[in-house]
Image (tube, rainbow, N blue to C red; front, side, top):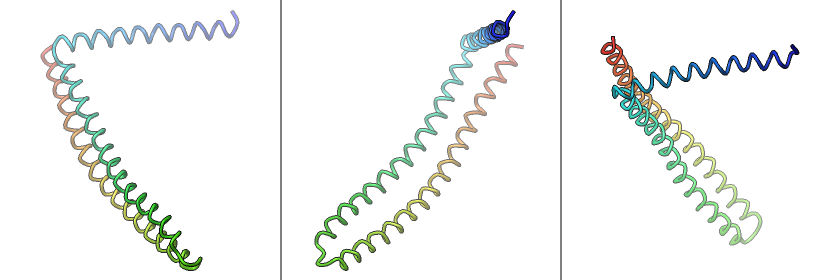
Length: 146
């Protein structure tokens, strides 16, 4: 037998093992669904995903508000530069703009860092609570089954 044939047999054997494991997992899942334990777990997992999604969207909304303000300032800069009487005045307008932009961006970075920290702590707390609920449900199911 050549090397490729040998490799194919190993892969096939591995696939057969994976199929057997999936079959066992499916039987466990069906048994759990019949007892009502897995729908509770699915609901808990859905709540955990919802928490993470909500935190992510909160950060996105904050950024959108920030960008809106910055874009309005960008538009105002274009208008202000065209109304300058000379290049020296235009340079001053641009320098003021970039100074405010740097202050705004560093302030927003700090704000986002604090927001992310708060959201992460709250999300971890809630996910931990949901994980404990799932663990208790599984432990109760195992004790009942034994």
